[in-house]
Length: 110
Image (cartoon, rainbow, N blue to C red; front, side, top):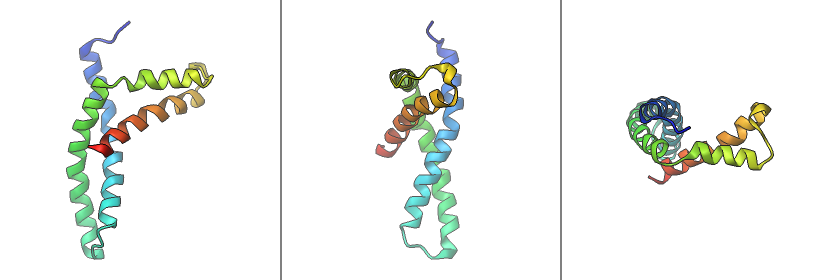
């Protein structure tokens, strides 16, 4: 049974918060640490770029979650690997491998 648009909207909005934060923190750290800033300027630059990137990453992740069926692809991948939902952690790791790869690749490319 397909998900209602209102349910999908809430789900996408809530699940993308942690994805946006984690992608932004890692990307900002890599960017700021490779800039060669003095240690006194490192933390302010990291905080500024992280906060700026979280908003951008959240918007990008929203569109990825809305238009790309990453969960369906992850579910299919996990099933193709011989796992089933009752396998618990193994199934979840295989599913999230695909889902998170899609989100990260799209965020990095934009």
